[in-house]
Length: 105
Image 1 (cartoon, one colour):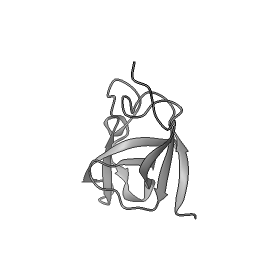
Image 2 (cartoon, helix red, strand yellow):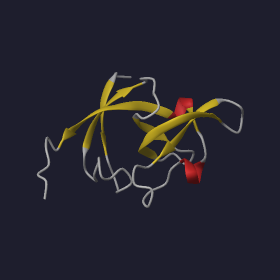
Image 3 (cartoon, one colour):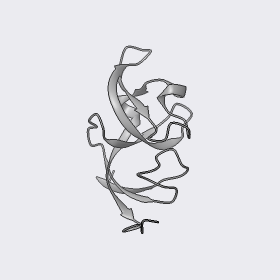
């Protein structure tokens, strides 16, 4: 697997910092830290960008992450799906690469 990739934000769950359609530079396999935005696979196979909040134990006793949306009124996160296994936190978001800037309204 290549160490770097691109992810596209879908939906409003990470607003206001990230918006639908934003392109993100991600580092595959990079260790997450509390506060990082990460790309994770939920148990149903959905890929999502979420905020890594803290390490917790999964139902099987393995180490995982509690992942939350920055916009709690939108999207699905650990409040709905539980702790996400460490192996399913696939990449750490390094930067938004598009759009380059946003004009403030």
